[in-house]
Image 1 (cartoon, helix red, strand yellow):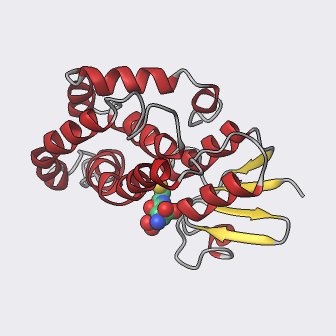
Image 2 (cartoon, rainbow, N blue to C red; image 1 turned 180 degrees about the vertical axis):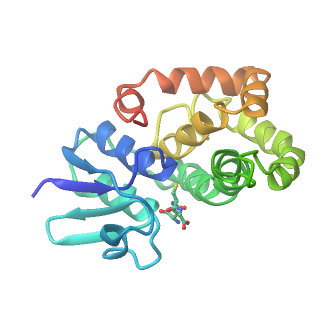
Image 3 (spheres, rainbow, N blue to C red; image 1 turned 60 degrees about the horizontal axis):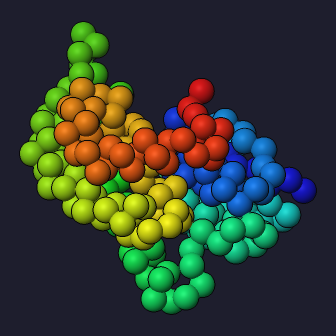
Length: 204
Ligand SMILES: N[C@@H](CCC(=O)N[C@@H](CS)C(=O)NCC(=O)O)C(=O)O
């Protein structure tokens, strides 16, 4: 059975696991479904996307799905097999999927996109708080991508986690400005954005 990746294309974590599948050359069907829809809750009672179905296996959590795709199929390894080379990649997968996602996506991008008052204006409380903390995080990421990719000189699964977040970040004004003022991070983003896996997973 062809693997099914379930969740709307606008979700950064759905894009991450789709990028992993694209990088590996693994065929999959993308099924668009909102968080908390019946189709998603049938697999993940928490209602979060992405979820996945493959060959009798149903799975939630982007890290678990990405690691399954990376290890169950042929294709280039997205986490090095050498433990010392894998360690920083695993560190950055964990950091992006937790703290970086929380600040960039939940407290900035998602607030901009979805948190509106009754007149349709963006509610800026969390955004303004996030803006105070974002420069430090952007500076940390700027240092982390200095070798060429996130924590490494080679493309890896960690980049599949970070780049969909940066893509959301640069849609909104302060995010765009911060990225443009961070030349190393911007160069990194532009480089990864040229990859076929990024182009093929563009949100609809
Ligand atoms: N730990 C989860 C987080 C997934 C997540 O936050 N997905 C978002 C969309 S990008 C979602 O489903 N949000 C709805 C919610 O949290 O209720 C994972 O890594 O898969």
